[in-house]
Image 1 (cartoon, rainbow, N blue to C red):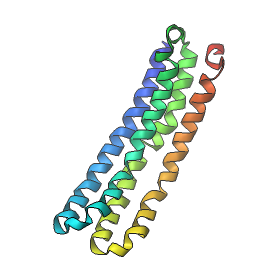
Image 2 (cartoon, one colour):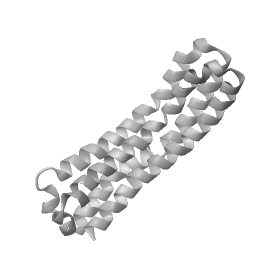
Image 3 (cartoon, rainbow, N blue to C red):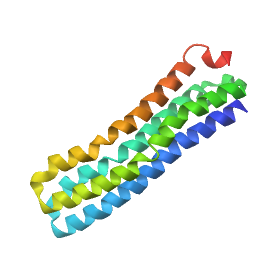
Image 4 (spheres, rainbow, N blue to C red):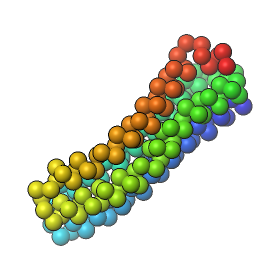
Length: 162
């Protein structure tokens, strides 16, 4: 039962950020395609905006991988994961699932505006990119909290004592 809770956490930690990142990237790519169609030389300048929401998928994957590495891939001890230990691992996945699962939607709006801005004026690239990456700080908060929680729980015998 504990393993089921841990795997549910992995599902949320990977699924929500990847879905949000994929959706956000598609919005930015639509704007980038329109700008690039008008001026093919702006492709590389719009590409950088498409990469900003991509980090969300990576953050979720890393947290999910850490949980899997320390449970499913750990061998026979994974089957002995208590329900409480599984719930604690599940809870450790929630910060990345909720923060990184939501922020890329908002990042995509800013990145799309940045693409339009760069499409109109090349000199605005630095300013538009700065606006686009500011929200990444909040993605990092959720990611760091989840990583620290999982690492603390899986180091030593913390999970075994639960």
